[in-house]
Length: 334
Image (cartoon, rainbow, N blue to C red; front, side, top):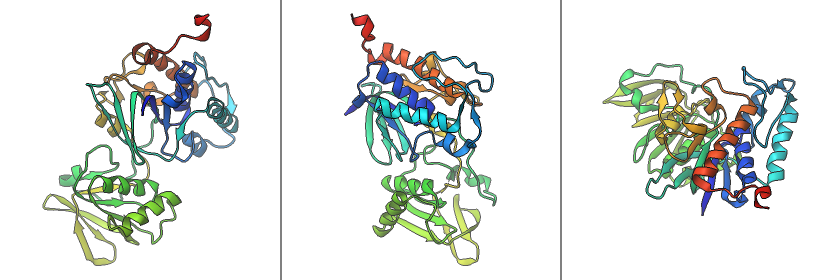
């Protein structure tokens, strides 16, 4: 099945993008939202203090609404409820806990292929609404400059296949990296300083344990890396208190928390001008049919929730004209 539009991210921008698509006449079964977290608007739910007011006018962006969705100064719970109702009342199809690993465009057919840890989808248009996140956390010990191209902090910046890879971390991202790298034909080992996997949700934990049982992933639990060195151009690790373990890998992937979307966007083929992606009319990238909305359309400092709503409206107007040929509003048909 080919979707009319696939939206990556279920925050305010992603939710409003889906609402705008549906209100423009795109059928419900042709709109798909993919969200890596287990719930929508994860950043607001996790990082906003409960008593903090979610302001409509944020960082100088005027509180003006041009689309279907709009908020005024609201409490955190009121904002979340508003977004909850938008999903429920519009019947938006959201796939939670599904991470996008790769996005390709076939310029012959004009279709996008969106590859996740759960499957593969086709779409005519793709909108990325993943927000601006913090820089990845890095290890305390130094990394030799000669092997820095072998040290990764995500699995989207470099294509890794048929290689020997060490993943460092014990959270959901670490498990998801292992699952993806195993699918790509890599020999994968996970190093985690604790002896249990309690930081992972049960789905990721069970998936990782199943891969270990099948011999597709090795688990080195209770191991704390002491140093990384360069051996014949490859990263080699040594563990604290274990002189008997010293092994080299083709790549080391750190999943220590924090991430940045820049590498993911560049790998897709989006052009950048310094730290900012280059955007054309109504937030379309240099890749035809690929749009950046929400914080990514507002610049490195991000924007307000209403900015996110408005960017969805503007993007949808161009999508309707150039790609989906949306039906005219009901009043225009009378």
